[in-house]
Image 1 (cartoon, helix red, strand yellow):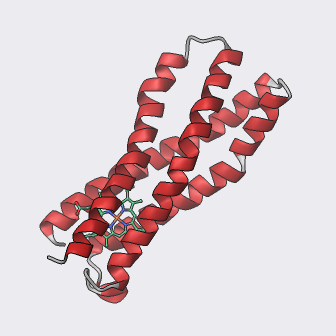
Image 2 (cartoon, protein in one colour):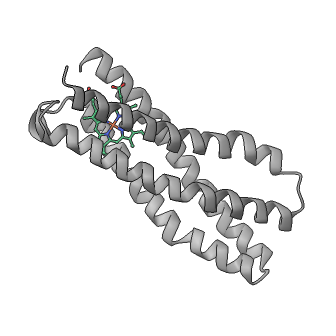
Length: 157
Ligand code: HEM
């Protein structure tokens, strides 16, 4: 086993952990705990949470792409043409997650910040629902991708 392959996969797994774990925490733990707060406080809390989390997501995306395609390009897993099925599935799910996140970041997240700055709570709440839907979809895709990635690499499919 090549050291650079091991290092790349270590970083790849850490980036997946931070992105998917952050979404899991936000959706499954923080969201229900914050539901009782009055809307202005709840929305301000989410603004703070997202503005701290989103730069990490960009970093995770860069690391996942660099390490994932690095491993494929360097031929550790048979290159693009000969890559195993679980890596094909991972690319489809992973690239979908990245497109959804980019749409979230440049769409509803910008609208959410503008609405909050103008004290338009209802509008901000509408954007927050859209953000939540995208995060839910990405959380499901992310959990599935991690499962497929780990099981696939162990079974060598
Ligand atoms: C979109 C581009 C991506 C590419 C090109 C890619 C590529 C790869 C490759 C080549 C492997 C090694 C597979 C093996 O050794 O059998 C791998 C493993 C893995 N990937 Fe990805 N991946 C991508 C996205 C993602 C995403 C978005 C996640 C999770 C959010 C993810 C999570 C994992 C995990 C958990 C492993 C298993 C690591 C291990 O236990 O060895 N990948 N990926």
